[in-house]
Length: 255
Ligand SMILES: NC(=O)c1ccc[n+]([C@@H]2O[C@H](COP(=O)([O-])OP(=O)(O)OC[C@H]3O[C@@H](n4cnc5c(N)ncnc54)[C@H](O)[C@@H]3O)[C@@H](O)[C@H]2O)c1
Image (cartoon, rainbow, N blue to C red; front, side, top):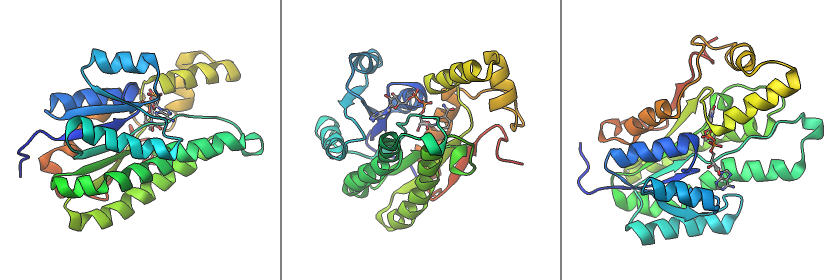
């Protein structure tokens, strides 16, 4: 199976970390790529520097999710690939977890992937070569303390992936999730700095003794490692893979 016309991809959180690496990789694979991110000058500059179409949107806002799909289709002529990647982290015990942060995290990490999938659905069906790729996490499988909203949303995203895959099969497109372990991105660099401060450790000790302690391979992944897997999932060769939850986690969840 091969794809005829250049396909259009929308990558959320596409101006930083894993999302930027996936956007660049899909662009190199021959897709036209729009990156969705919070509308900040720095995000617009990153998109422009990499010749990526920019869609400014806040995924905590329902109306922005609908507008983002409409703007992508209007700008690039269709929508064949949706990568739900945007996210952020908040660390607090449940007893002190701010309720407004919980609401926003659940919206950005779980409700927005649902809404974008819903609004993209007719375009992916029309495509005949559609893909949804949800960036979940090892924390879609297992828990760690103080990350209740993040972990709840990532577990939910795996459920959404499997349900959407069952519904999308007859429409001719696939839905899969990728579950990375720790990847060196701004999100993780901030966590390393925070934990070094709160635990009184060096950043190297936070990486080796906290983040990578359960891992078989004691080295952080790179965003490009995740992008290579996303590239395969989006490729024609992966036509028969759907509802899959793909671990790329250094053996973190093997024990
Ligand atoms: N870095 C890791 O170790 C790791 C591991 C597993 C899963 N993940 C997941 O990968 C995804 C990307 O993470 P990353 O490490 O590249 O983070 P990152 O902070 O580098 O990038 C996240 C992007 O999401 C965008 N974003 C956040 N809130 C948004 C909102 N309301 N509307 C629109 N965009 C918004 C940010 O602006 C940013 O560009 C996240 O879903 C994260 O949970 C990351």
